[in-house]
Length: 151
Image 1 (cartoon, rainbow, N blue to C red):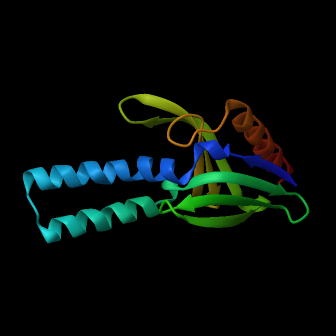
Image 2: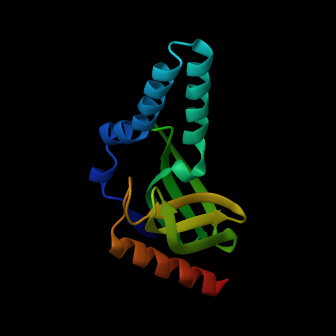
Image 3: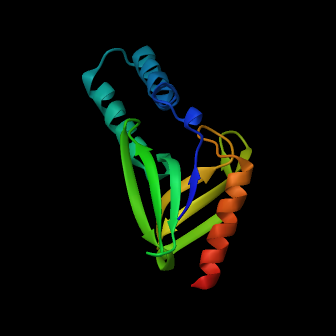
């Protein structure tokens, strides 16, 4: 079994809360400034933000395990800041794409997107909020290429 793991210093609880809730705080300040205290607007913003955090692009993938005996990949991740989850993907269902992806104002970040068939399972970035090392991204890419060649 081969493992790739994000450094635990990169995703402590305090850092996850700070990075994920900073956008919510900014949205609430803007709403309060322009609209004032309005329960409908505040609950709508909160509801939309929770839906945004539930997107699979916002998963914090902290560990990936390749099990050659059962021919599957296990993704371990955090969602909604606090909750842990895991997903299993069979080797024949895994599709991946590595390339530059644009985030923010023109910055491009090298990203591996992992798909379970046609559906996004998660993404791993070289830079940004939850950055993996260049060495682990390259090794992960080589492992995924070797799995694709076998299927």
